[in-house]
Length: 242
Ligand code: F6R
Image 1 (cartoon, rainbow, N blue to C red):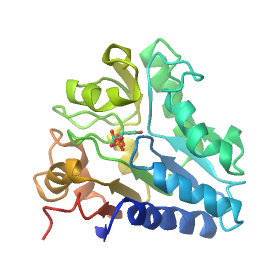
Image 2: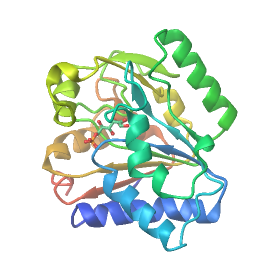
Image 3: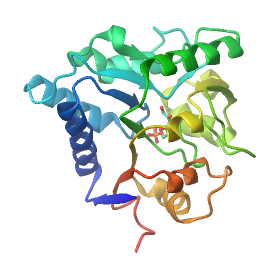
């Protein structure tokens, strides 16, 4: 595992964006695994900037996203579909037909998960999977549980996740209670994993995920078993690392 400790959020974003840009430059048709949330916003902004400047070309890039809220229509500004278009896809020269997220509008969870697993199967190996880190150690929306998930699954969000995500909604009741997420097994199949974390609020969980026991109670701890993980975090999130 390679760990980059960066001075602040901006430097973290720049380093992480460099890693993704390098992948796209060396493999223009690559499949990127993408994440939403506040942590990657800065790195998406850098990629948009570099695409504008002609440094990175997304025209052949394909993407799969980690997760989507169940029940939110695509035009809802809290859907992850909306987020990805708003932060990245609409501002770079990507072909939107090559971008994929779980379909949160499918009511039947089994059908939605099966459909996304088929999409992932069809797209093939993820060259680099970007991950943020939940306060409870979740990756994607794979919440702490008694076992590691394999394929796409429908999860009931835990109270701490609803609490953390309510900042994006008008009121807490508006936060969807269920989400579709790529499974841990699929995440672990990515050729390379890029975990980003910033702020003191992530310090404790980052430390236990990367140095504590590997357990489904801390889903991100499984990353210790992946052969090619790069962690990019700011100093505040790295507080407990000597
Ligand atoms: C988002 C996702 C989540 C977030 C995590 C951290 O697609 O899968 O696991 O990465 O909840 O969110 P932020 O970055 O908002 O702290």
